[in-house]
Length: 481
Image 1 (cartoon, rainbow, N blue to C red):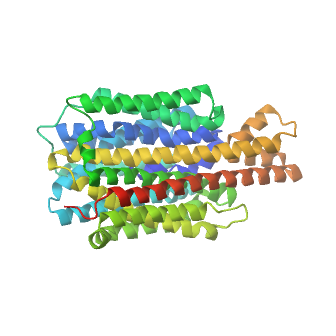
Image 2 (cartoon, rainbow, N blue to C red; image 1 turned 30 degrees about the vertical axis):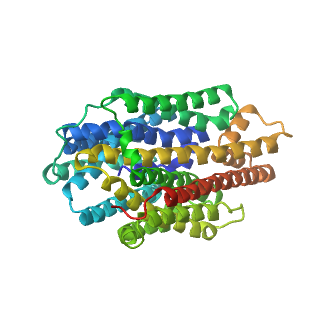
Image 3 (tube, helix red, strand yellow; image 1 turned 90 degrees about the vertical axis):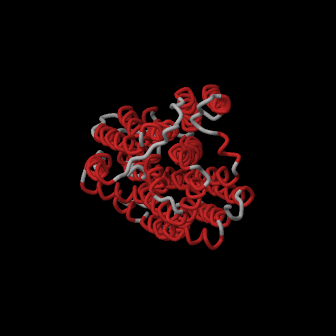
């Protein structure tokens, strides 16, 4: 449920363009508000779970997530929806590290733990890939708020079953929550994401964009310095001295960079470019979801045969190959043209996520599993948030540049120009309203500009994933001790 909500909204983005008149940057914020708060609070909630009890924090997170989902379902504006999505991130941050630390505590045998984490990672990965499918099914029958309201009964069932079935555990010597560190991590990440997302609107050379980006980097630097000197750090930087931990944790973020970022643009491509409904678009993501489910289940066997270094590098390089294949799409491409890339994306994520997660958790002492799993989750979510921000912003920049040049010779009213430049969805709405030959030309220009931007974003994602594969080969040890 937590990971599904990172992507379930993607197929609803065109609906939000039509119903709430959201532009590209607002769409990115609707997606990233959840991920940013989720990532920013994971470490604090992981250490809190170690201290007060993982089961208690998990149950509280379920309740908070259900409340935030109900708020999001009935939001009447873009601003309210962004705030509700942020509140859902609080509940998700309470749940996610608790799940992994509970599993790690329950399975002490390394072989059993590897298989259990493989199942956990498969479920997590499938949640990411199934988001568009679930969203499409709901949108085919209900209004867009149903993609959030569905969480409420699931959370209630989770609460009812968790009370008698989930064992509690905690670290009696756990540190106090590091609130200054939490505030600095959220502020730094928020400023960097704001700069990346708003750059296409305000200009990459804009003083406010550069100022926010540099300030974010500075705050994150202060966060690292604070964690190094404080007696009770939220993030124990000593963990990163272990090459197996540092290589795996970086790889987790690079996997989700490509996965989340590509799903953000592909679900729009399937609807705006190929003309599928939300349900039809969701169904066409099934091959990627199936690949993740199947490959994640057998990833532990690949680790046993080839070792974590080769498995992790193979996963990232497969993701890079899939993104590169899809980046060659044109306005004349069909769904079958991009299907091989989608399947490769799923195979790579299925290989890499369980391998990296098991490597992270296998390096930590039992008493630090809560904060360790939170660190893993933080990099996973930060990677996803940056993927949506960077790939989405590259798409927006190329799209707006192309459309601005195309519209330059014509006297377009300011309100229509704003809608056209805001998103391809807005341009298609204007084109349908104009109609005739002029409307057809506008729609063709908008789709061509969108494809150019999507190709640029996916190509950048491929380069990042390929660099991650090479990093895994250099940093990861061949076999764990």
